[in-house]
Length: 119
Image (tube, rainbow, N blue to C red; front, side, top):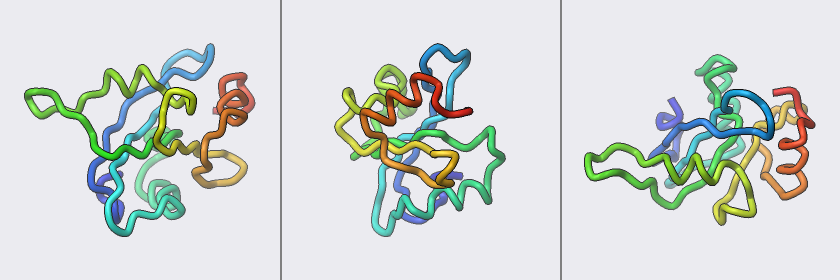
């Protein structure tokens, strides 16, 4: 569904660890193209996907790596998680109170890792 949003050239969805929580949270690496607007992405996903299927985190990627068999490579993406200290590209968090994807700053990252949001 993410790749159907206007301006998304490619999308790769995977799970990332948050602090000491069990399980993984959804994250999507997106290669934006012409006409992509992060501002409308959340509303589109709310309309198209149930809450458990929507990514909490978005990472902008210049290109999405593939394996020799043309499968999306996720190992490095999972390892990096959503830490802005490890990632040069823009990162966003679906902030519950804002009902929007907000840029992840080091302060927001620390707040998420410390359990500052009900996820």
